[in-house]
Image 1 (cartoon, rainbow, N blue to C red):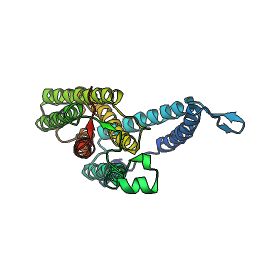
Image 2 (spheres, rainbow, N blue to C red):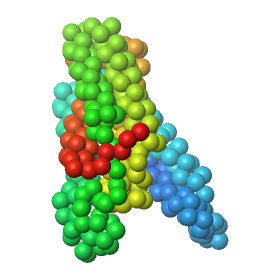
Image 3 (cartoon, one colour):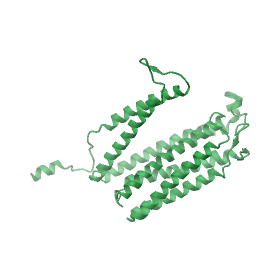
Length: 295
């Protein structure tokens, strides 16, 4: 009997996961969401989107796909947390999870490189944009002729301070966890979440009062794509931290086993660093010599 148990227990540090339905279900949800996104855009344009005789020009298909994706994320990560509680996250498994998170953040870096590339291509060569596209895109200058820009040392600076403070509070929470200070961990995470929510509120207010729109010029397009996707990442990071806060309050994390929190902290620091580059280039550098909007 003892020999049978010895053979039943894995004699290695790797975790062979059980068959999971979530990759397949998640793929179906992503497909439905992409298909629904096309239908939603056609709906907004007032067009029809017929497939097999059915008009899918409606936003509801997109939200059905989104619901499937969100449910998959919740269930899949719940299984991962359960595996950690069962002791499957050995040192080797944890190391590879960290490698995975690092590669994910690297892919996110390249995602933002694309938006910075678009911005600097248009801003450093406005004459070529006007020559090879349409003159009204830039008027041969940057910011484009007739565009009033946001004051970088008003709300953007305020948001920069907010994110820098959030970086210190999440670091405080991390150090508190390493020293098994549960109160400091919860307080640090709660403050980080509050600062993340405050950042999103300020950015939403800034967007509502921006003196230009997405359709005004290539300046507006590159501005809203770069800062908007960053804002979306802030929202995702805030949700990530809220989950960590709930888990911390439930006593999930320990000084030696807390990869979920560590991944959230890495992601949040990535969001901080991207914002510093956005603030320095799109807000500060691009406003030099431009007309600052007065509210």
